[in-house]
Length: 339
Ligand code: P6P
Image 1 (spheres, rainbow, N blue to C red):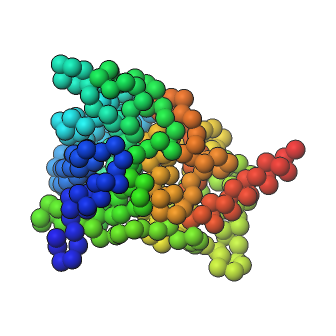
Image 2 (tube, rainbow, N blue to C red):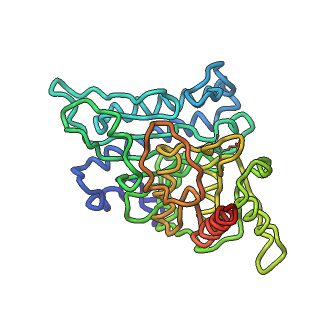
Image 3 (cartoon, rainbow, N blue to C red):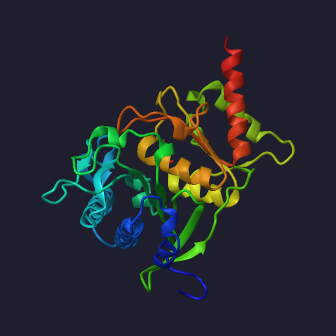
């Protein structure tokens, strides 16, 4: 305890029973994520001083320049998770295919799989803007004791057993859910422990912040253009405030605390949108819904989308329920008026 704030470890033990199917597995899982987050946080906070900023000259499966910290964070999370004997497979934004975690000589008895974006928003790294790690956990569907298969990773978001993010900002925070609400823990770097700083986070039902890359305005669907113009009208509590950091974890974290909507629509430049369903949209949707918000692709609930490939992209609208329903209304009207 620090003051009257319990540590992440104490909180997990107290809430162990909430993690269904667990036999101490939640603790082991989160202990590995906690450790990896501390190691990456240390490196991120020294990025300007140590030669780990900038690209490595490689491109990841998304065709994006891999930043050195991307590669580093990916390695740290993968190695830490594998060493804890808790998962049978891992999917990462940085890896083309999923990683099979070898079990002991009797095959792999681990029951969980992890999907992650090890360092989201990495283009912000060398300009000293907050970045984050996003993770999502499922129970495997293939038989325990056999190698993990692709279908284990292609489950809809409603099957998630845990999801969370680490935000490497002015302070490092771990925010997660196991389906019983959302809690935030802040790292005290002097001690190396995460302390419960944001218990039972709730998305305000309404908000006045909209987060979207307005540089793509001309490429957006008509309904999205109509909603953005609605946000900019002088009426009632509008115009709203436009806040867009270009780092999903940072934009979503701020909007969850203050009220707002994050949008990454389809556009004539990215027909399916940009964000990846499995390790960005689903975990952020789980957290959003557990905090009382809403997350959709503009029409369908994100967590009910049936995935078809590891790195598939979907349009993403997530945040205060009234704001998401408003943009869905504009999208529906524009679709309807087209015929
Ligand atoms: P754009 C970072 O690359 C990311 O995946 C999200 O973190 C962020 O919100 C978005 O892409 C920014 O994309 O096209 O607006 O620069």
